[in-house]
Length: 344
Image (tube, rainbow, N blue to C red; front, side, top):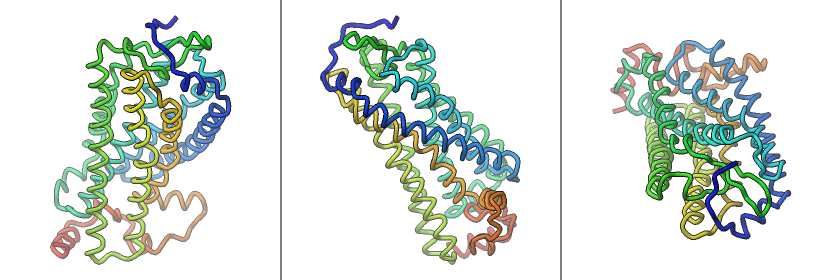
């Protein structure tokens, strides 16, 4: 039985718990995301692990992103069950905590990984000589991915220790991290620190870095002698990544704070908006394979070959097979030096 403190439920939240149309809508989104994500990311993981070489740092980041998406997809069926059961969690406190942590760990690891890919693109195109020797090694990418998970799980540690179940006596249901109460963490300071760190270090700063990287990349491409097809691919990559940030990640990160502050301090709720934004945050797992397609020429080649699409785009056919179009990681040293001199 969840350890409740007395808390007054607002009418808007109770009405949403009773709204079967909303639960069916969100469940439908989760079902579509689960099917598409498991299929596309399963295919992407197979290509990245067994059909793509060499394993450059960008490939390592993509594998990390794929594993994160697949982890989220495997727990979504439990969220679907929870919604269709009328927001009544019957699988125990530990599984509620696991579901919540996987949800947010997926979102924040996805954000950090896409930021790392953006920095890779930036260094490869705008600053090709900086850390060139380091970028040849995959070990740093593996270490960085491990560090991402450690940081995210460390920040989410208060949630990992808390009892996230809450009994709504008016409806005789146990909710899973849908009703936020003060005593789930030791003090209000812990709540403020948790949400501030989550928003600032796991969303806002990565967003600013990502925007800076892609704006710098686009400016560099406009000034230098790249074909329109090459420019088009990197611009489409930038659009997809920024779309994921703005549409998938931003609403949930903003509304989580608004909902929590309103719930804890003013006894009000933005539960419907928060719950809908949570479903939007899952859609990123369906869009990540498109990021792989535009970020890595080798992945693009293998996917097209697997789908019997033998004709490559003009941008790919004009680039040597051992050259990464965007990072120029595989270029001979003299070509990189020539590019750097011509671009400055």
